[in-house]
Length: 91
Image 1 (cartoon, rainbow, N blue to C red):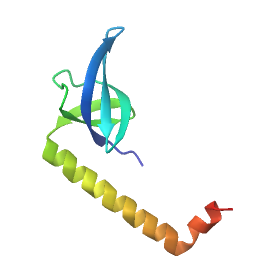
Image 2: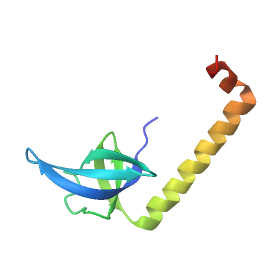
Image 3: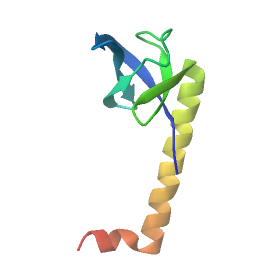
Image 4: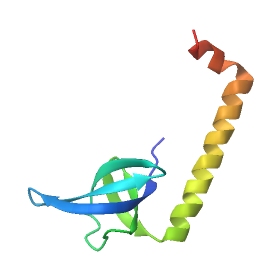
């Protein structure tokens, strides 16, 4: 399954004719290529897929998406615990 995730641009720079940004995703920071969203700048939220920012998104939409992703992760954790799959990981 492919998933595009919103992130907040913390800083931008240019390197070898391409534009990059340091983007934060719920506490995790990654380097992202910004060439597809030339209008995006520091403080903006962008939708990122496989290291490329694809479009800008407003802060409210980004926050709503973060909340949904967190809820899905919580459900996944509960299902894994209930099925006993976690105990297999521990050895």
